[in-house]
Image (cartoon, rainbow, N blue to C red; front, top):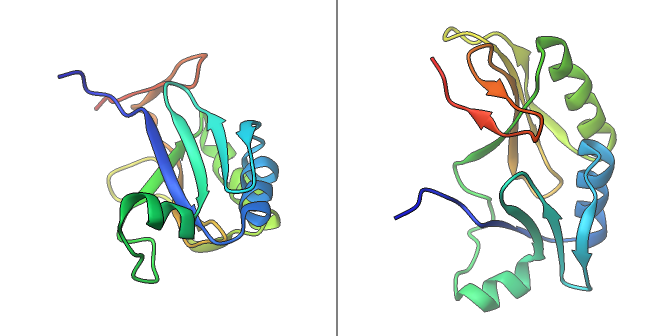
Length: 140
């Protein structure tokens, strides 16, 4: 079976607020939107923001009040890019959950939660190459 992810969908409470966070904070452009969902074409997959009530009805799952123990990552090409991205995300409604710092294993990273509590790591890893299309290659 091919190792790939097609769509990641996040349950959100307020579509306008979430859309502003991703468009203003990351600078992304929606490729589709209606009253319940917004899609962003990413580098090889689609990110969806779907009203939590509609997502719960679709999946049959109910949120336990939190987004769970996971984090998505947005890798940047240089160490100096981490803090400006975090700052833009905060200006767009995010909350810093861990200030930018250098972890023991190398690189530089910080964490910002979107307005619905989804965790985003903003990271620079000198061993991970990012190509012109934004694809990250795992490397050690």
